[in-house]
Length: 299
Ligand SMILES: Cc1ncc(COP(=O)(O)O)c(C=O)c1O
Image (tube, rainbow, N blue to C red):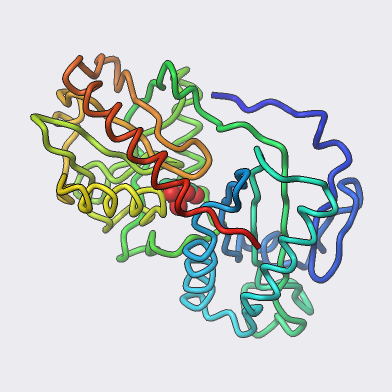
């Protein structure tokens, strides 16, 4: 699915460092760590009428990712909340907004990998755009399995939500060439990890399954679904899942902040899904919407 340019975003204001800039002037230095090495962490947030969904969990993951990368001066949560609030206010935004929150290691005194060259503090970017949910949740999406593996902890732990996204971008390029919407990425052992940009769930014989979070981002939407299911005594089983199980599932769906819950109707040319699976998915959707209403946070 190719997102399109929204003219409403032409004159948005973007927060960088400690102030707001017009879109045309919103730039980071060529010495910034994100330019030099993708050395940054990020979160995708969604603003609804009653607040930002799971804001606390997103800010916690941002902080934990930055801590894992040994950032030395992670901004206080209140500073980040303030920056988000200023940005939304300046853009008169109150719903239907996607916020790309990025924290880079900051500007280097000279080009190079060494984090000791970062002597001016980290750099926070709040990019808020008018954006609908990115996938066609009514008709579902088609996927292929990618030959690019999702990183596990032996390479670059997928629990760090970093901006070094080339593995996932290469997988997405394969999906683009195959003319489908997204790519399923496998782990080092060939089991399903996640899509290039979302987590994945299967419904089979009344069971709900999702891959272990060993080589996928432990998504906040994923976690919210698992918790909501357990509260309703519908256990979600986290285990290794093979592509054959994916092809033969009663229903497969993707989960993420930017698209919410999206049915996957085809994988590697195999049609997926049946009436039984769709029936259970409708129940999960209703449960998920109810949960979302309870987890939006005003700032
Ligand atoms: C690779 C990947 N998987 C899954 C997700 C979904 O995570 P969340 O539910 O926290 O938005 C994202 C979102 O950024 C992602 O980049």
